[in-house]
Length: 259
Image 1 (cartoon, rainbow, N blue to C red):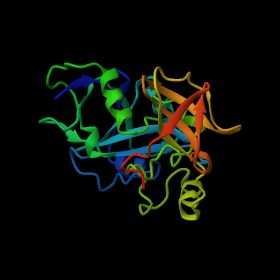
Image 2: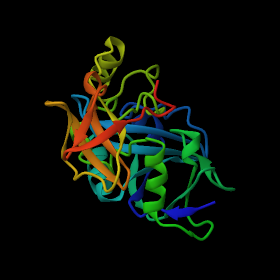
Image 3: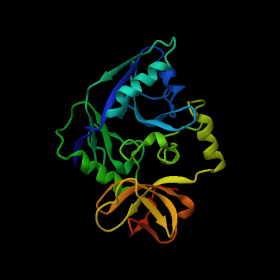
Image 4: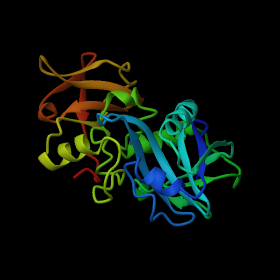
């Protein structure tokens, strides 16, 4: 079973007596009921509901650990500090590694909260990695699961466009969170025009930012990929028919988990 260190991920420790209610009121996920060692998937949104940070939220005795894109860790800490006010909360970097195993959760790994087939995650030292992160992302792409931090500029998208509602990233029953009004309205009204979906093709991936066309109509945008498969942001009303990217045929394959 391959194990990789995810160099693209880093940790933020949020601790103190107010840590859980503080985060519960900010994030898309229920933090107050999070048990020790339990992990959930969620996000911090902008007030208009755009995706700022995708997060894995780990329960700790004295608060939580947030698993975030490494290049965005400082920005997350700064953003959280803006919301502190008088809350008794400490926010600090934690330099332990993040490990992933696949296609199952190895011993000592927690099942990925998005989708069991993704495998497992672990914080801190563990088994010696025997694969690189590119192999992990190839597995993720084979399942059609988006990674907003890896698949382009996430702050341009709404969480539902990145399939958070289908991958256990939003608790619609927890009460308020930043960006809740827009997110709940999109889900309630079914006003979802675009989603991140995998496209398949022969040969190397089209260049990021390239158009996906349905005839002469723009159907979406290529994000990132590898030989044979890429993630794209697609208009749901234009994914049926003959699609092309860079003049080559591409095919949309709906993953099994996509309702």
